[in-house]
Image (cartoon, rainbow, N blue to C red; front, side, top):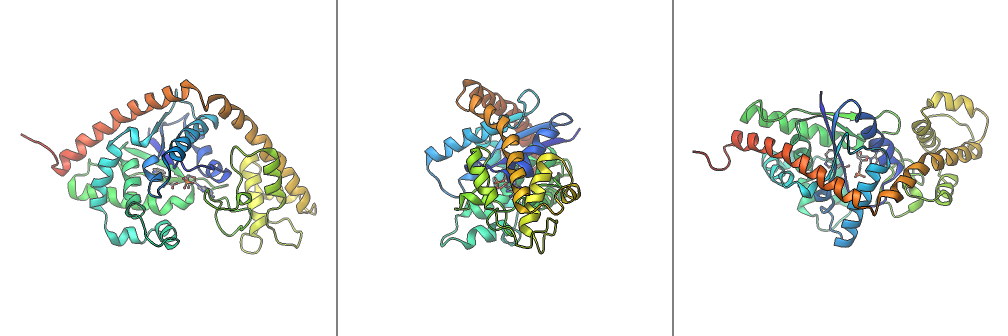
Length: 329
Ligand code: AMP
Ligand code: TRP
């Protein structure tokens, strides 16, 4: 049975892109796999933020994990910085990566373009992500397809280390990308991805948004003006995005939706989509409010960290031995 590992950054505004591209798969995988879900707070400090904001976001994401249906009896849920081996293996893999390959990461290129001085962590981040994954002998990594390049790098690093230090060092993992919803686009600019950090809040639907906010965001979502409801990413990115969100939430195929809304007009499609999204998020929001400030949440995270740490320490023993690190008689 392959182990599953994935992580989400605690950086506020978890949105339906995160849900449809990642969280929903996390839940589906629990029944058939041994799953580990991490709140990757070390990744979040690649772009500095205040202590209050960070710790608030960590607990928010933890509560959302449980609210969407991750079951701590089946899966391990924990905070990255509670297991020190992530940073330790992160360093080892930083040393196994090259500046050339890290410079080619599109996420790095994008994120560094916007700033005058680029934090080093932003550059070495994919090596830390590889460590997160390889630390648990992971077979499957469910993510949105914006992470493909990082997963490929993780595989490259694992193969490189195995070739040099022994084939038993790492399991080479595979990414698992969801079809519908793998790439949810901004509601304002449907040619760019829905993002936590877009300053326009109407570009996204956050999981904790009120029905009024959801309605506003969808009703004003950017579309073309020819009025034809058809999936065509090239020429109709706005309508295509709405159709794929609709499809991902309901399980109806895009073709079925095109037929259902044939001749109906954008207003009707949007109104129905508001209902679909509001109804899908309601039970998540209810569970979230129940657990967010509970002792139980703290207990689940502490227990998760202990279990994760035990697995991580076993891997570190093997890695250190293969690399020749530490004391040996
Ligand atoms: P991040 O927001 O970068 O921490 O991403 C957390 C997870 O959500 C990752 O697996 C991403 O691939 C996924 N994700 C982020 N934005 C989107 C999006 N707009 N559409 C689909 N998946 C996304
Ligand atoms: N880089 C991922 C993102 O931005 C988050 C992440 C960090 C992750 N470590 C991971 C995802 C390990 C999967 C596995 O979305």
